[in-house]
Every structure is written in structure tokens, then in C-alpha cells.
Amino acid sequence: MNLNNDTTKNTGSYLKEYDIKPSYQRIKIFEYLRNTKSHPTVDEIFKEIVQEIPTLSKTTVYNTLSLFIEKGIVTVITIEENETRYDADTSLHGHFKCKSCGKVYDFDIKVSKEDIGDLDGFEVDEKHLYFKGSCKACLKNKLKQ
View 1 (cartoon, rainbow, N blue to C red):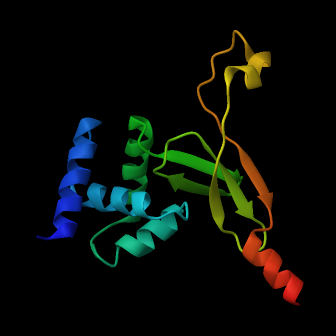
View 2: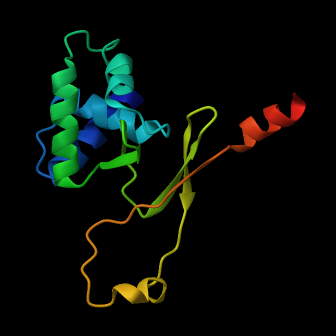
View 3: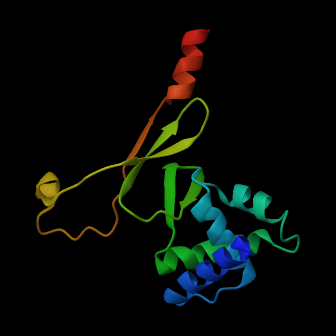
């Protein structure tokens, strides 16, 4: 049994559920996002997948990501104004960016209606929570110096 082929079939079915035609490029881009927790940029996605699909263009990556965002299966993360990252985990969670190493980490958050009571009568379309600081690994390295 080819596990990679099964994964591709499952991803193709998932994309179809969202009315997305599951082309090979779209499947590979979504699988990369789903399996990569680094919240990659377009350049990172392109550099990784072009090794497997040499004919892939950066325009295809941009267009595919735009489609995924439109269909609600990928979210945009903009922690820094000049850097757009992508996340296939669309559940409510926060992000922490280490100012030393640049890595972005997920963390769980729980938000109840009571927590946002001041927004009673408002319609919330998006929720984003970002923190910046130093990650555990960078803090350890700093203490060793």
C-alpha cells in the first residue's frame, strides 16, 4: 500500500468538499501546509514544493493560496507587516513569534462570550491573537552565553 498515494487521495477528497478542483499542485501545496507547522511564507512553500514539481511557478502558489483562503481552509498570519505566512490549522488558536530565531509557534486559547462582552452587538468575522518575544530555546541559548 502506498501511504503517500492514500494521503493524496484523502487530500483530494477534502479539497472537493470545499469545491476546490484537486489538481496535483493544489494537493501538494495543501499537504505541505497541513504537515508543516512552521507557518511558511510563499517563498518557503515554493522552494520546498518546486523540488518535487519543477514546473511549479510562484504565481501558482499565490493563486492556490488565495483560493484556499477564499474557501476557508487556510488562514493568513500577518504578525509582521512585511511578512505574510499561511496556516492550514483554521481552529481558534494564537501565535507566538520569537524575535530571535523567527520561528512561529501555535498555542491554544479559549475565548468565551463573556471574555468579549464589550463587543456585544458586534459581528466578529476574524479572531487573531499574536505574541512576540523569545522562545524557550533562544532563552536557554542566551543563558548559556
